[in-house]
Length: 104
Image 1 (spheres, rainbow, N blue to C red):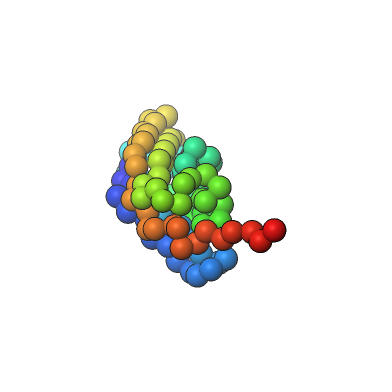
Image 2: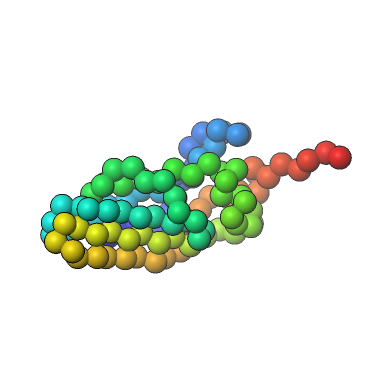
């Protein structure tokens, strides 16, 4: 499993999304792929070349806006029963520009 060392933000304002992409090289056909970001399951698309997209507004609920890395786990299982896992910190762009304060 290859997980990039760096994530990117696409979009602006309330449409901003954190995008992390990677690849899986297993012997058999990929049976399942699970991704967690900042301790919560993240939606994943693709298989051998995968991508997860998380709204920045959701990520801010899981992390401190001043954090420059986020914990990530990727678990892949193939049709032959082989399981691979990667746990790492992924560098993220600055999020403090996305923080909004509510007026009371």
